[in-house]
Structures are given as C-alpha cells and as structure tokens.
Length: 430
Image (cartoon, rainbow, N blue to C red; front, side, top):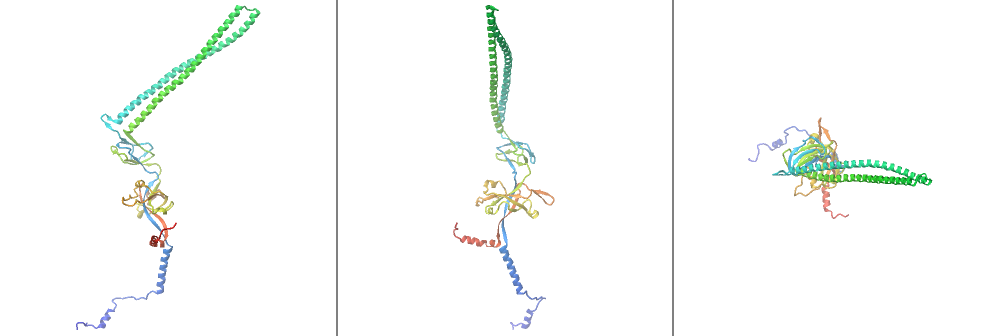
C-alpha cells in the first residue's frame, strides 16, 4: 500500500493540464511573410556591406601657435638683476631696454669693470682735449697763413699795376728813342742829349725788370703759401684722424668693459611683453629665460600637429579636419572645423619636437617613430558662445580628427584575409 496514492491517477493528470490563468491564443505569422522579411533584411545587410563605405580616421594631439611666434629673451651669462625697465603687458619698441643685469667682478679695490671704465673715461677725456687742441692749432695756423696770403695777394695786385705802368712808360721811351735817332740825323739835338736819353731808357728798362722780378717772386710766394695751407690742413687732419682712431678704440674697450660689468637686455622687435620671469634682486644663470615678447600686430593662429608616419600618405593640403579643444569641451562647445595648410615631407628632429608640449616624449626603450609637422588653418580667429566672444591663445591644446583612406565596408571586413594572403605570398616581381 506504500507505493499507491489515495487519489486516482486520472485526477492527478487532469490537475497537471489545468490553466492557472487566462491565455490568449493567436494564430502564427505566415511562413511567406517571415521569408520575405528575412530576405529583405539580408538584402539590406549585403547592400550595406558591398556598397557602403567607411573612412578610416585617427586622432592626433596638437597645439595652437601664432605666426608671430613669441620671442624668448635669454640671459647671456650669470648675473644679478639690478633693474627692470618694463612690466608684463606693456608695449615696447625695438631696442627698448627690458632688463639690466650686473655681471661684474669685485676685488678689494672695488668692481673691476667700474675701475676699468673710469680709466678709459679718463683716457677719452684726454683724447678729446688733444683733438680739440689740434683743431684750435689748425684754425690758428690756417688763419695766420690766410692773412699772409691776403697780404701777398694785395701786394701782387699793386705790383701788377706798377709793372703795367712801367711797361707802358718803357714802350713810350722806346718810341721816343726812335724819334731821337731821327732828331740826331737832322742835327736838331747833339750827341750828349741823345746819350742822356738812351741812358734814361736803359734805366727805365732796368726798373721794369726789377718790378717784373718782384711780381714773379710774389706770385711764387702766393703759390707757396697756398701749398703750405693745404699741407698744414692735411697734417692737422691726419693728427686728428689718428686720435679719432684711438678714441674709437677706447670706446670699443669701454663697451667691452661695460659689457663685462653691466648688460642691457633690449627688445628685438616691437610688441608687448607677455611675461617677466625675474624680478629685481634675483640671480640669473647663462641661458635662463628672462622674458617673453609677442611681436606687434594682429596674431594669426594656426594649429600644429605631429602626424605619425603611417598616416602621412593619406593627408594632403586642403583636407578638412575636426577640432576639439581642451579649453572648450566638445560636449558643450561642439567640434570646430579646420583645413590642412601644409604637411612637411621631412620628419621633425628631436630638438624641434622638444620645443612643443603637444607631442609626448618617447620612452627610452620604445622604438623611435617619425613625426611630420603639419599646420592646420583655423576658420576664424574667435567665436561667440552664446553672447561672449572667445578666442584662441598660444599653447592651447586640441585633439584633431583626421580622415584617412576610404574603402568599401567589405574590404575592411576582409582585412584579416588580405593579411593572410599577403603573408602567404612569395617574393614580389618588379
């Protein structure tokens, strides 16, 4: 009796097949409809795989730079900042002083550069006195010679008048001598009168020769004085030039001494001072960055990228890119358009890469990869969001999406097959 139930078997089977709730029984979909929908699904899927295309893309980090690059001023040697001529944000012109650095050495007698500068200043003072004295002597000597020249010219003019007058008198007496010959033949005068007249003629001729000789001597004296004036002036000029050369040499030595004592850091271009690193009283070392200067004018910003070698063949000038800035999150500001301006065909050097913070330094153990400098033109210099004008600035980081090769979807799906096929091939013929 232990294996038998107190209920009938039919009752138990009936309880198992009873519904505990209400159920709605519907008839199934027709098989032809299911077949059509399945075929349509596979048709759409295959059409998308065959005719659909996908563009491979990569993301590259970059940073904004301006065409007018910031100029960094460095300390040429170790020294002490003794004076700052400007402040950050101020406008400066070319060659305006920015810093004064004391680089002098000090001994028991004081600063070496200061003592040397004082000695050179004394030599310059004496040299200037000598040059002034030479100029005074030149003026005095030339004035004296010019006075002599004036007097000789006056005497020469008078002598010319006397010679001219004597010449006319001599000509008259010569004509008179001819008349006296005629008078002697006619017997109008005696021999003694003729002899006296001849004596007077020769006496007049001797006087004319003396005056003419004096005139020639005065002419030669004038020439000698003019020559002496030119010679004296040249001598004084040579002396003055010699001391001027000495003065220039002393000025060069003074500049070297001043450079060994005090350096003036000046602005190489017009612009605004963006950063003043050191303050008065701080020590600097050779090569330290002292200040940064942004050249004047409206800045033109560009984005600099460093493309890996695997992407360079697919990027060219004029390609469009999408930009996302760290300062302006794309969740709020969206993406910004850009256009490739230029792509370098030569890999960037390690030194050039180290000048930018957007490229991560390579690990010492990692294989070296080539990077190519790429410049991206921004569509605008600023934008408004929503009612505030925002702009770019140097050093701003950005992520750039570059669109590379475009292929049909089936080629991307079959990429592993292409890899296997390539690995199984033998040597490639030319």
